[in-house]
Each structure stands twice: as structure tokens, then as C-alpha cells.
View (cartoon, rainbow, N blue to C red):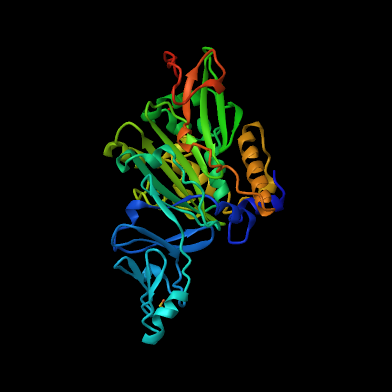
Length: 425
Ligand code: FES
Ligand SMILES: [Fe+2]
């Protein structure tokens, strides 16, 4: 449970809010690379309660500006995109991809150059990696070190990044992503059928894991530990790079996923699902599998999920027949619907937290402490230059005879022979 003040501090992300100002100090995923075409339509991007426009210039570079034209705020999403610049359709002001005003044809010819030189365009540093355009919206002249996450260093063929926009605050998104306890409960109707990740059925055999943590300079490593009937332990070891990134455990030899919830504004967030394979390209078949049951649009794969108006399409008949949630489209929709149904900004003064919420409690505490510290002038944490983000890897494994803390995700112990599994329908 939080006080009303703490809840506000956690959730409010607009300009001038302590959390919003701190979150601006991190590189964040803004838009899929593929959504931007050279000399194509600029794309509106809303982040942290502010509106921006991203575009790809003639030579392939990406520009990221405030959406409103510096003259009188006409949307630059309407602008002409050509000649490595955006030209506003109202009075023709032309801003090159580096954010410099290069022409103001509405001014008298003799003073154009001087006038243009004085106009400041709010533009932001970007990086393109992992098939994503990342942006830094913070105040520092030099942005923080860019994340060398494994997927950011892979060719586009090895990464599948997709995004889902949902109607709730970013922290509801983060909490759902961090919540390991719901796995064998809410997703039980799906788990037995998800062939690509079959060890997940072990989560069904013990729905009350214990949680242990190792603090890390980038956040923490969490072990969700489920002792099994044969004396082995099923450990789902997650890596959390605060404030956003949760590396999801699985037992596949070369594939992993990362999920994060990025604030659009106080009432909306964009969740990024990034699947990657460090050894080989992700096949079209696999990409299709990851999109199965969704809207099919990688820029917003939950666009057809529904809302209160249709109770998100929940199928009561299927529930009577044994499906636990009646949410029949896909696994992520179960998470998203649970999050949206809390209403856009959940009232955390009314909760009743239990042992299984220990990771939620810990994350809130860490974020609140960081935002308060930032407000008092401390630097934004979890981004020390010495951190090697390339060494962050989650894993799910059944093991025996060693502490989970000694499991090296890059060099895991040999898998145990499979045990008999109970598979839910
Ligand atoms: S509003 Fe853009 S040029 Fe006038
Ligand atoms: Fe989930």
C-alpha cells in the first residue's frame, strides 16, 4: 500500500514532475525503425506527456523534434519531408535534420538568415539500435552512455521489436511485467500450449514461488524459485534494469525477450516486447507465432483488444468450459487487460499486498527513493558508466545442488533430465 502522495510521485510523469524529470534522464525506446521511411511521413510520438515528431531524412538520419513548429506550433507531422529537412506547411519554415532552422520564407529576404539563426528548435539526441529509434529527452548536454543490451548490438534480422499501447499508467505496466506470481495462475490456460517455451509448465506445478534478490548497479536480479516434487528447483531468474527494462527468463538456448513499459503520459503507456536471438535470424514463422492472436500491427499490437465497453471480449462460455480467464486472443492480452482494468491510474492506497508482491514493493521503494533523490539534486541512478549492459541476461532453469545465485546465465549448468509434467488444458 502506498500513500496518496507516494502514488502521485510514482505515476506523474509530465514536465516538472519529479518522476517525469528523472525518467527523462534515460534512453527510451520511442518508435520502431521501420515506421520511419526516408522522406516519408513524419510520425507523431507522445512520451512523458509531451508531443514530438520523428522523421527519417533523405540520407537516412533520424530527426526528433517537438511536434509544434517553432513559429506558431503547427504540427510538424504535417510537414514536407525532403532535402534532409522538414518544411512546415503553414509558412514554410524549414528545419534541417540536425534541428537548425535553415529558411524562414515568411520573413523579409534581407533579414531571413539572421532571424533563422536565432530560432531555437527543441530537438533531441537519438540512436538507432535493435530495430528501434531511442531518444534521450533529458537535460544533460551529454546524454548517458547508450545501452549496449545484447539486442541493441544484433542485426535487424535477429531482433523482433513490437509495441502495444494501453490505457493505463506506466507503473501498472512495469508492475505487471515484474510480477512473476501470476504466471501459473492467470496464464494457466495458455501455458500448456505454448510449445516454444515448454518449461513454463513447471510454473503451473507450483503457483507460490519464493523470491530472492541480488542487488545490481543497474537494478536487481530476481530469482523466482519453485521447489519441485523431485527435489529440484525451477528458477526463473529475471534481470531488471531500472527504471524500465525487464529481461524475461526462459530456457531456450539462444533466444530471450525483454519487456518494458514506457510512459506516454499519466494515463497511457507503450509496452515494448523485444524478442531476440543472438545466434541466428528470427524466422518469419517465429515472428508470426509471436504475433499470433494480436492485432497484427507491430506498432501497436493490442489496438483491437477492446475496453470496458465489451469487457475486452472476455469469453464467459470458455471460462465455464475450463479456460481460466476467458481471454482467448493471446497471452499478452491477459496481462494488458488486467492492467487496464485497474483504471488508468490505480489507487494504491486501497491494496492488500502479500508475500508474492515482494518484487512490486521493492521496485516501488527503489523508484520512489530515486525520484526523491533526483529532486534533491542527486544523479539519476542505475546508469553508471562502468555498467556493462551487454552482460545482462535472464534465464529459466531447473537445477539441483547449488545456490541459484551461482547460476551463470552465460554458462548455465547442464539441464537435468525432464521430470514428469502435469500439463493444464
Ligand atoms: S507555423 Fe510553421 S511556419 Fe508558421
Ligand atoms: Fe503475464
